[in-house]
Length: 542
Image 1 (tube, helix red, strand yellow):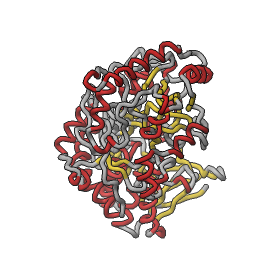
Image 2 (spheres, one colour; image 1 turned 180 degrees about the vertical axis):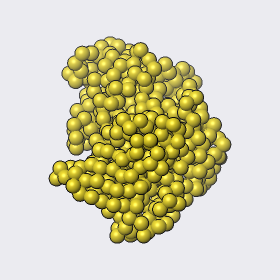
Image 3 (cartoon, one colour; image 1 turned 90 degrees about the vertical axis):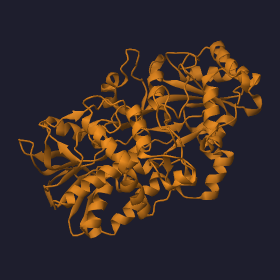
Image 4 (tube, one colour; image 1 turned 60 degrees about the vertical axis):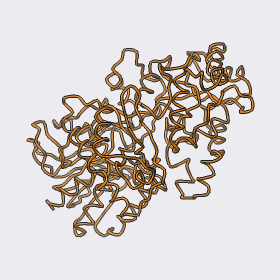
């Protein structure tokens, strides 16, 4: 049995845990901090390290330079609309307001002080469909993606390495809380490579272990509660866009002790997942940034949604419509020209230009498309199909499908209706997807990446491309209930002395800062926000 003592123990080496540790050690560098991380050293930083690196801010310098008039009041109105909070979301709602009014001071200026820089064009996502979303662009891309974010923060953490110990490949399986749920005294677990058990004695324990979406079986367990629909089907193929360590194990350790969990069925999954060409684990998926000019159809070749599906407006609507379809998956139909200009992968791995801060390479992909990415996916991803005729495309689609088959005539009619409207000219448009493309192109951040009314069956733009899209798990919006100091609340609605939960473990704050929908960019931001707030309370007690 290995024994450790620490002033503060942090369970989980993701962004929220790193932010917590950094805030503490920079203010009290003489205290011993122990970080327990299940993953490998090269994965230190968790899902944030793999992310695109978009961060939500209200009233940033980047917005002001672009003439974007934003304010916490406007953002709070948008948040309330999109979240659709319920009466028992008391703590989540309080956290949301605290975050909306505090993200500039607690996150934006803090990141800038660490050397993080943002791309000058602010992106506009989750604008809202039936429910209003972001009224203005707020999605600030980190220059270097989430990979750079973690690299920079770890570089700052390394300055204090004599006060910080990190146990990699170590799993916590118990947190010591007294029988009255009043106080924490430490935790215990096992070193995975040696099977050696360990104990940690500490009066401060911070749980930063992520959510449950790395465990597809748990996602399926909560599926019906998430979508509130008898038509909602559990996908046969559910890709994992999270990390394996986010399996919810510590959530249920706490629940067994009597600590309430809040609405784990609320999850932020994505509609456009494909199998990773080189998976590191079984079922690993990539999240595509869907092409706006592509048609979204079901297994039979019928267009999905009323209005038809277009990304950048309401991710939850996309997912809910798709899981009503046969097999609970979809197809994206486009041509090479559309793919080259509009299709992308969300994350650091396949965006080398921005990840590695190569400005020329990045600008070339913006202007002329990411040929390397598109050809890699066309040649290596099993969900990508190319063909030089619609007949050939449908034949290949059906070879990839088991239970359901695409009808050639149905798909042909679907495409021709769309294409013929484009041919008739803009003044005769009566299609919601075309109206949304017009709307998207009004903002320069979208105009350069959105084609001007491109027909699908345009032979000059061939080959045709069909992408089989699966639902991809990503983030858990529910979690451990915390007060506004990030302290875990017990079943008597009282804080447990010394026990904190931050980031996704706490539903990004209070057990559910987002309600049912996220305005995007709020995940990285709220991980830092909750971590720093926990640290400020901890600093008063050590």
